[in-house]
Length: 232
Image (cartoon, rainbow, N blue to C red; front, side, top):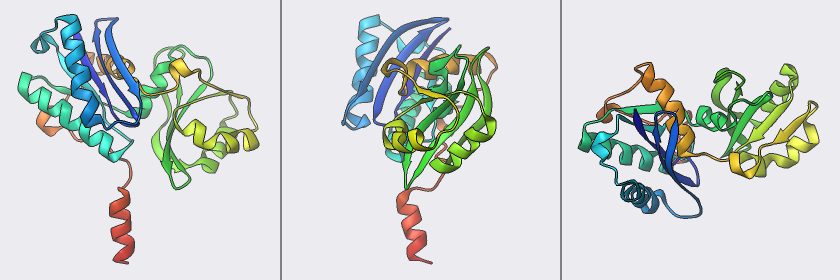
């Protein structure tokens, strides 16, 4: 079984191929370039290095949101175009779930946080002791509300994601349970975890036709919110 993974929900651009239980290739860049410049060249490089015929993959796993509206649209369009061209299904992998999957096997409560701006984060809570257990599904919420939620649960927490840098001060000031931050090797989105978690979904038959795939933004775009405010 072979899956192509695509991750474009944040500044990180990443593509990977997972074959059964092996990571065959991964290309990840965390730099200020648009995903329209990076994703297809990354996939092309992987295909060339592996001498891979894309028609031999079983499906394409895509980080389906939340995250950057532009990034998610580019990732979605890339995956849909490839899926339609090679007649393969897509797998919608929730972005925050895939981030938590970076820390598979950890004992603590895993809390990915993505900077959603306006003092909000995209987050979710997970246990990863024996596979993925969703304690709180991915959502958008205020950082202080999240900290209160973590107080109520009362377990040691592992934070990861680009929201850590933006909210480290409030975490260090207000957290009342023990916590730590994931190391740099595990603290950002990766196509490898999108593909690995996507493999679990694929085994359960959770796929979608390429033409029907759509990202889950969780909230309205800034342009939509500004238009609603303007119109009262």
